[in-house]
Length: 392
Ligand SMILES: Cc1cc2nc3c(=O)[nH]c(=O)nc-3n(C[C@H](O)[C@H](O)[C@H](O)COP(=O)(O)O)c2cc1C
Ligand SMILES: C=C(O[C@@H]1CC(C(=O)O)=C[C@@H](OP(=O)(O)O)[C@H]1O)C(=O)O
Image 1 (cartoon, rainbow, N blue to C red):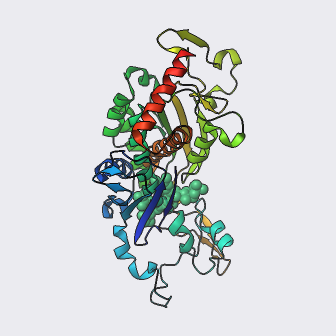
Image 2 (image 1 turned 180 degrees about the vertical axis):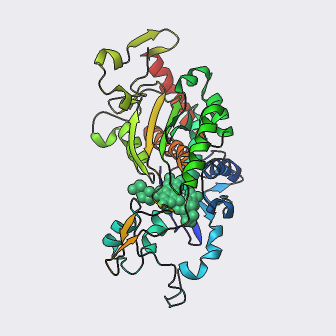
């Protein structure tokens, strides 16, 4: 499975093409729109969210809500393009009238300055920000929604939530109170901050409100859990076959993500091996399993069969309504950075995006290991492999 996205933040459309999804998978725009809404509606997002509807059209690869095995084209219309039609017009020459709303004072933390240097966009850094904007993640979530549908067919469940927003931490001990991932999902989906308890949700909302009032922004940390992956996906034989490494890349590839760990590794710094390794147990009904899951579901770049636990650190939003120092790229004079309409926080959306990026990498690993022409054959092969693993 591979995919590519295309589109500028204020251009006409966002697109994704996915290749390698098996034939026979049930898929509708409603499945995808459900996930797009989760990404869009978190607390702390900016005014753009009032303009967009984040709904997908399926343009190819699906017939009567069943995949054909051919490339799937997905499309999300940018409602905001109406307000930018002249400025963004892909097929109109530049004129003084449409060359307005330029960005000349790069925002610290955004891609503006380095992107401008790299692509020689010295006339207008908007040429950078239009593609570096995280609006593109709408398509990654759309692709991830397809991956999640596929994973659900083989009993794999993936869910992301906000673990920390600014200084407020979700009480992870509460996780043990949830019977399964569906219960975790039910709680976090219902909370505007996508956290795990009503108490932390309140505190997080206060932090966001306060930051907004102070014309500042906040970051945080998200956690993604995945259950039901059989042991032995990915490989230790080559660095680029390691599945945890692929997930790490996918997470840090999301806008604003600066760090990733597995099994709360950052919290294990300074502990002894005896406190951290997951002891190996066996029972007739489960086969091999672990006493703990401190490795977050990976050993040697392969799934262990335990729950996958991935965390990502999201930096605060770079655009500040009280801007920091910058330099005008035309005059080289010091100026405050440009202000573009912006979110106060995107950690709420980031949890959903991270969930979908993990789903994409897990689906890719499943499709690389098993026959992927048809969903039923894939399911048969996964079932046979699970029996083999259990009998080892
Ligand atoms: C869902 C989401 C929404 C974002 N919204 C904004 C925003 O409104 N304003 C902004 O300056 N950055 C926003 N960002 C962050 C920038 O896209 C990101 O910092 C920028 O592309 C530079 O990339 P880097 O932070 O990965 O280095 C958002 C990120 C995510 C994940
Ligand atoms: C539109 C989304 O995020 C955008 C990501 C973004 C950025 O710089 O990354 C800047 C803002 O764009 P705009 O200036 O058009 O409001 C966000 O709204 C979204 O995620 O749906």
